Image 1: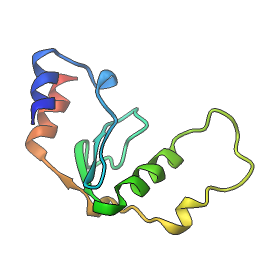
Image 2: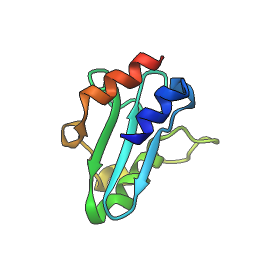
Image 3: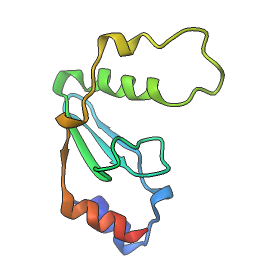
Image 4: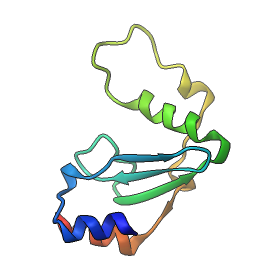
Length: 104
């Protein structure tokens, strides 16, 4: 994957790497890592792909909804009742993830 090659060649540390890339109508590409807003699973650090097709925008909005707010909310988030997002549905590439983690 070109992104991993770029990070390796330029020694891009974890905190400067992307969190999520949206390819509308196809998928979400997450870079899950510790101490990040996108930390999907302790067992799966690195790139995870959610192939959501027509539901890609809804999936992205769900993840935006899970991020910390800049000001306190007055009620519980409603998207969680309608959209489910399971870590088991994601694809991952262990070889690329090992390379990302090796950068530091």
